Image (cartoon, rainbow, N blue to C red; front, side, top):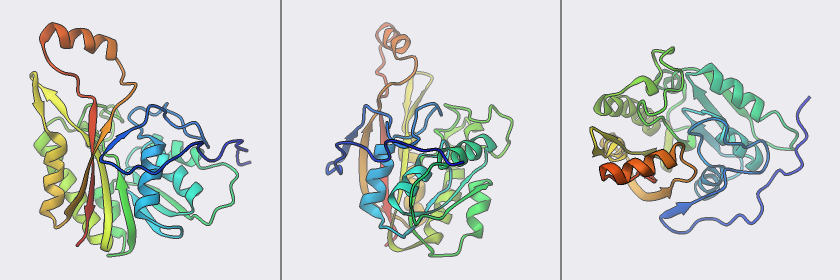
Length: 251
């Protein structure tokens, strides 16, 4: 039996209109929660869907993770095709969208590696693509048990190489003039700042995309903040508290 949800839509939602986004809440409507580590905010997904797609459009999320995109597509009447290499993510997503709601959305969820699964998608068939990939191996989602999992890759350039394969498929499957959104952050290695987001951005530009927007997203409720705050003062480095949301256009 599908779950009955009392609150299906957010209260006080406003469409963002600047290049800095900040959402302290983690979604208190429908089946959203913050239990899946690294899950992106429903406010981010809702903003993207409302700005870059319309009801009845086909949307693709190559790495569905905790299912935020799927829930919002169901609520906002967008069709979705989504993949994830991790069976835990697919099972969680299927559970998340199992609630009562009158929707025209068709949700296609497949357990598969995005680099291979996207090859089966017809060229120029997607109206909008959005994804929140792992940030190399900052969070190891499958704990090294799934060889194809991108979160097993430690080397940032090697990670960017694999993201370029996904970028090529995003470009091929997206309709001309339409948009592809990628949310990704940076990291530190040996105390030095590593611009991982910009390395990934360069790969999307390399395959033919144009950069429409670079949105800075403020990070909230990061784990171990107290520990890292102490160490940032002790060892003189700044905490990374932002991510980049790149909006690419197929022109």
